[in-house]
Picture (cartoon, helix red, strand yellow):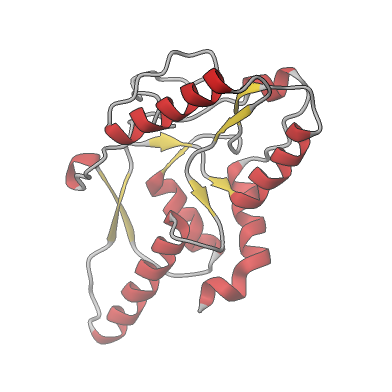
Amino acid sequence: DYVFDGTKDTSYVETDTPHPLTVYGQSKLEGERWVAEYLQNYIIMRIAWVYGAQGKNFVKTMLKLGKDQIEKRKQISEIAALKVVNDQFGNPTWTMDIVKQTGWLLDSDIRGIVHSTSEGVTTWYELARAIFEEADMDVAVAPCHTSEFPRPAPRPHFSALENRRLKKAGLNIMPEWRESLRKFFVQNGEIMKL
């Protein structure tokens, strides 16, 4: 999603013109261009807001921060709510769904750029609330603005992706983001509680 500038107010489709805002986004776009230039038979899957049981990701970060807040509350009755950005929009996407969609793509005739994200659009704040609900954690969360959390590589404001090519081909198997988050916790609940 970093290949787009985030100024569009609807989900980006594969034919939208990329306009990255950061060096990170430019490097992603340059990688796409190199693949397209040097290969004839390729698939570039644009994915976004990825989470899974392995590696660092937003879901695991929220669970750690939530656990920390619960521990602090045992010692101090009133602590500040966890602030989470509520003015960035995207599609949280589970790694397992990406793997399944990849298999379908490899068995298809589709080539080129394909968006492959979960259905539905949300904010980091709404995602955080959903994470704590699925984890059955009593964590205070408050919405905030991006300006309160400056980052070295700023995220696009609206970076939701639409799986237009997959849908047109009848190959979109990406579920709604909340459904996937629920399945993620069913399959990884014990790991996430550690």
